[in-house]
Length: 81
Length: 81
Image (cartoon, rainbow over the protein chains, first blue to last red):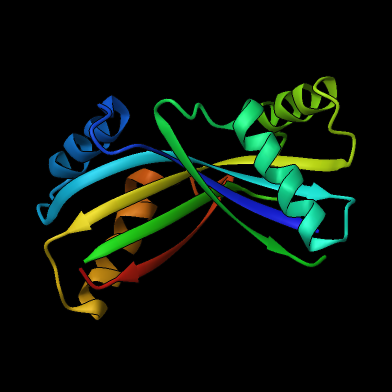
């Protein structure tokens, strides 16, 4: 089973990396950009094939390691192998 | 219009960050992980509201700045504001 996880900064948390991207896009002549937020994207290959158990496992991984839940949100979707 | 961009390493490109995550997950007791790939996730707020033009604009941004197309693939989806 495959898990695709998106980790994004919570609203209100400063995002200097996103700011740098916005500035660089402006410098390249893209003016229609009102905001940029950068996050992380992680793909996991799981040997677990039961969707319920895989979901619980990925949730635990996000809480314990992948996301800093003080400042970050995570979302994931599972896809059968 | 909102654009959600996923940037991932191409197959065959070494991913030390993904490897580090896999090791850390193993150390935490998650054994069912066969592979981890880490990528980037970027959300853009665009003032452009025409989907065709927004698509062309985001594609140009990815090619010119956001993704290193030698080693990375990108995918994006647009969402009306």
